[in-house]
Amino acid sequence: MRRKTSVLLIACLLAIVIVPITGCLESSKPSSKPVGQLKLDTTTLFNYELPSGGRVVRNALPPWNSGEYNSHQLRVTGGTPPYVWKYKSAGPVRPTIRMSGITFGGGGLVKGTADELPPSTTRRTLFVTAIVRDSSRPALSIEIPLKLDIIDNGAVIARQVTEQHLQEVTKMIKSVIASEGGMPPGASLSFSNAIIGEPKKVGGSQWSVPTDFKITVTVSVEGFSTSVNGYAKSEVVVDVKKKSVIEQKLIEYKVG
Image (cartoon, rainbow, N blue to C red):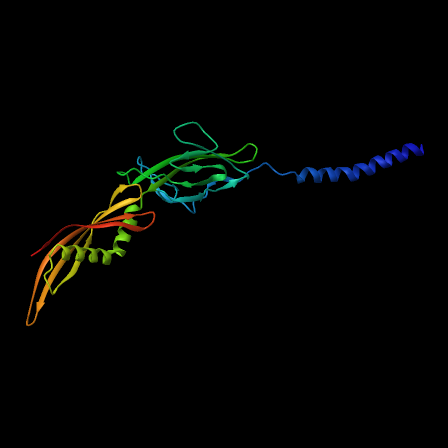
């Protein structure tokens, strides 16, 4: 009788101790319930309007310059991390997609060196849909349409380099006009109204920039001075990668 009583007493004690511990263990298991809704973090993106309907969507990445390396980290909020990222464009859904030198890859990282654009192209637009799935059960997922513009900023660089190089261009023009006899002895040549024309892509990283100047040739002798106006057209070839002038030449000039 004592043995039965002892067994019953031990069983009761175990029940008192084990049940709360088991309850604690069960309650410590991570919940699969998602925290909030899964959505794209748009704090580093821009607005753009879709062609049809004019609906504003915050999923345009900052534009990238062709020929330059860049990276952008896409992020989502809500749901239960970690997240699985996949992508699709014109083909099937894939873990990574590479377009025009840019890779849309794992963890929402977009990186790469954008391909150079053809001579007649100044902008290329990429459209990719990111498909993100969280770790909750059942899993949440979201499809995110993305837009990325690759722009050729060579024209801007070519113009800037030419502006910085204008003094050297005028020296070249003076030298050529003098060598061709366009300046009589004692004459001076001055420049005004410099106009930098529209840069044009020559090939690769080279751009041609036209420049126009109003010129004035002044002849001064003892007790006498006269001035004659004219113009000078030149061309500056710029390497936009090196940000330097490759060539400069006088195209045409006229005095009087």
